[in-house]
Length: 360
Ligand code: ZN
Ligand code: ZN
Image 1 (cartoon, rainbow, N blue to C red):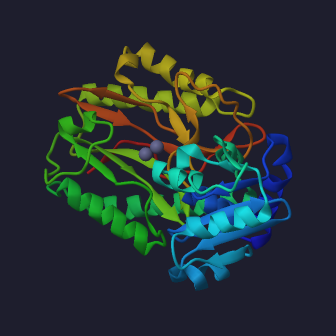
Image 2: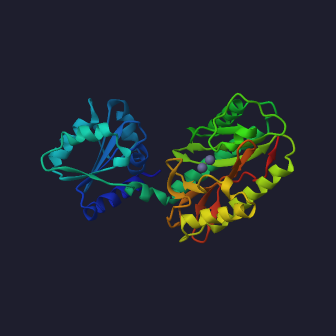
Image 3: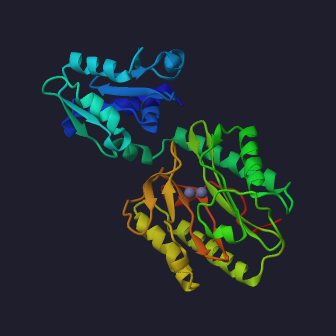
């Protein structure tokens, strides 16, 4: 990503400080820190002041921080918080914005107890996350690449596996392929769940083997150049029976209906409702026990959420998943998930992997 993009983001935040009645903003949550500075290290804090930004980190990241970011860099030998407070005190700031949802009580207390006289910590909720919802063209290039890697890893793996493979070996193979294709790591723990376990929406892979008659949910995603992808596809070990086929048809139809509903200006709840309506037609709406999707980017789950109670309006450039499912305890579950991006006129499905039930 171009450094100018980070500088532009910091300028926009700095320019909006007065209207939020803040003198500065403190950002330490890693995805927000990366979004505003380019810094990817595990220990850092960014202070955005009008006209300048300072990135605090420790000696392990001295070289990396200078390579990744054009911020002024302060390397602290001890706790970052002490240098941070010294800077706050020297700058004479009074109202310090911080992200309560993203800071431990420990850090909060240690800053609060040492604040300069008349300075106060002011909670800021969801500001940077709001900015992150709409992706730039450069970010969409990275998401597209991550989605492509994820799909290739799935397709290469599925072409090679045979019934009898263990769930966890299949998960390991998918993650290995992903990395060989350019991902840094999976964007979450890969889900492979066969048979009745497919009815658990967030199952962890076990030593169980894929056996004929199993319905298998594979939910996987990559982080590539920091950006997430997310996809769910279903496998059937041998030919599926009539009940499975019907359930699969229902979920796929619900997924297509939700994708159809995605366009700028519509609320996230209306996209969710489109999926639920189709499932209701099959008598399966009570089996759909999670939301229809979520935003993704520097995090695998980020705003907006597409659930029953979410009323965000979709805007061009938002990257979201569409993933309805149906789960029947003691029988099995089906979920189909794509990564899509909202465009000026509707949406583009980035996931290219065919949506059929894959027979192995
Ligand atoms: Zn997923
Ligand atoms: Zn997802």
